[in-house]
Length: 164
View 1 (cartoon, helix red, strand yellow):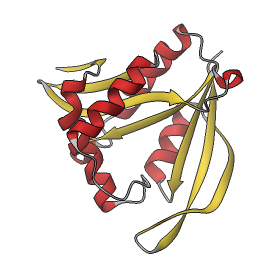
View 2 (tube, one colour; view 1 turned 30 degrees about the vertical axis):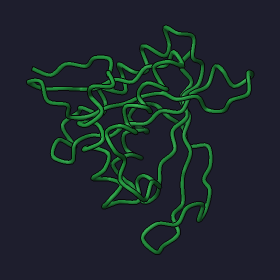
View 3 (cartoon, one colour; view 1 turned 45 degrees about the horizontal axis):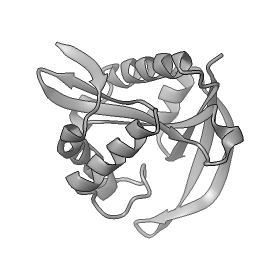
View 4 (cartoon, one colour; view 1 turned 60 degrees about the vertical axis):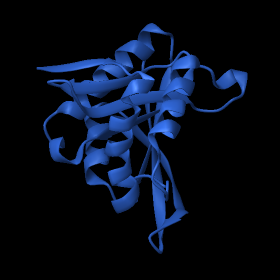
């Protein structure tokens, strides 16, 4: 059975294992060194303590993916906008789990008064572009060659979803 629940720092090792695959093998994240379970627990705690959701999707007790919202910017006027992030275990992509996670995340954000969700997508990434399009995000721009990983420049497109 698949469930979505709030993440806890105790989920950090499973979350880090999912994330570190993308760190080591893709340009989806600009992180260049693997993240320890301790660092991931700190990140989960930071998001939760800022009153934003961090969710995990699990099946039969195993974490298969996660999604969370973080502050878009620190200035007070940005408090109604967040940035979303989502990662799935590499073996379960394409099964609709990302859509379920995002739907759950966005419902929680709506209930808390968030107005706008921003998503950044390192390019190329057809799966993430497709997910954001299916969820109703609109493209709003791109930074060319904003990051460098694995010896090449990477562009990032930005998307937004108005929740109200």
